[in-house]
Image (cartoon, rainbow, N blue to C red; front, top):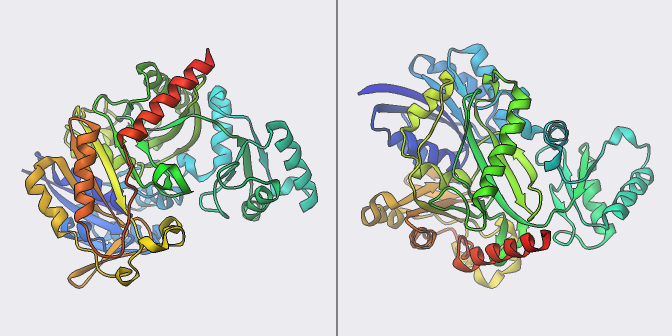
Amino acid sequence: MEKVGILVVSYGARAAAMIDAFKRSPNYEVELYVADKQANPFNMENAKKHVVIPDLNVKDICRFAKKHEAEIDFGIVGPEKPIIQGIRDKIEAETSIPMICPTREYAIEASKVAQRLLFQKFAPEVNPRFKIFHPKDYTSTEEVRKALFQWLDELDNQVAIKPDRPAAGKGVGVWGDHFTTREQLFNHFMANYAHGAVIVEEKIIGEESSFQAFCDGKHLIPLPETRDYKRAFDGDKGPNTGGMGAYRDKDGKLPFMTLQDREKEIEIVNQIFRKWVGSTGNSAVRGIPFYMAFIHTGKQLKILENNSRPGDPEIQAVLPTLKDDFVNVCYKIIEGNLTRVEFGKQAAVVTYKVPPNYGGYINVFPDKVDKSEMGTPVDLAQAYELREKYVDKIRVYPASMEKRGDKTYPLKSRTVCTVGIADTIEEARQISLEGINTITGGALWYRTDIASKEHIAKSIQRMHFLRGAAL
């Protein structure tokens, strides 16, 4: 069996899902060289060489890659920070290792302003109405307040406020969800404005879907559609998070979507892709340059944002159902001849378990947290044992946790996810929940309604209403 060495730049369960997909290769003896944000137990167990780089510093990752250059055939990147900071540019300039992720120039999620302007140029119909507020354009706080309030008058306060750069200020805020007065809105706006440009755009009502696509620079191969659960608590309550779970259906689209919805998404992304990279393509975008949040309004599809990386938790709902050899898929991405990818006709449900402070859970539900368990080791043994019962129908992916000696401890972000794979969403959900309920320690908690029949029915009903209202 041919040996292949793969560099994986890792943060969380997303990279664990990629590593798992590589290790399932039937054609290659895979050796993994993992540059990790923390001592992830799954990655350490599966890596030939593992290094912890807490800040995912591009120079340190490159140094690790150069050290093992002779053994590494290609690299792949999960988290956004190294992509935005030019990890591909640096490694490909200093080594012979081809990288799967966009170059710095094409890391479109680096700027929400640049995204909106790009979409305005190539597919203006997908943009909500928006206005960009640059600090350089205003001489005083009062001047920017006046301009902002004039824009709010035009949109009747129904807006979303987004910082240009990732993680600036307090992040995205939406009228009716994060603030209900103009003063609250202005405070949120200024917290972001202090870090740079802010976009204030029309609030769009509808159902969200996550669109991802593999790309070799010439061809765009859509992955099965997924639904992400951003809000922290059941019933879509609480603050936005990194994603509490996700699901995919066996037919590649979501239950509330029509086939025409899916085809329209593919058409829109291809339209942007072709106009962006040109008719002959551009290898600088290889990887997953399009991980788009679409919103279905019953009328025109809109794009909330785009990212230049695999989605977390969305990719965890997709990779376990990949039928093709992931190593071969990556080779074709690098060679520029990826024309198709086959996925199983299976549903998958991802459920995350997270620490008590995540999403402010302990403040909202203090009586539900066993404080004596906070910070204690997390035991995944029973979850792993379920692999014997379900064989290829369950995955356990450690995320924000680290190994210390022979024990594993939760960190501050999402701790671990379980993925159920089955013929129906409900079957997959039950497997995922069975797995998540076997995980003990750390006072961890989870959303109980990820991919529930009730939640899905609500989405379907809402789309029926929106489509009817659009007639």
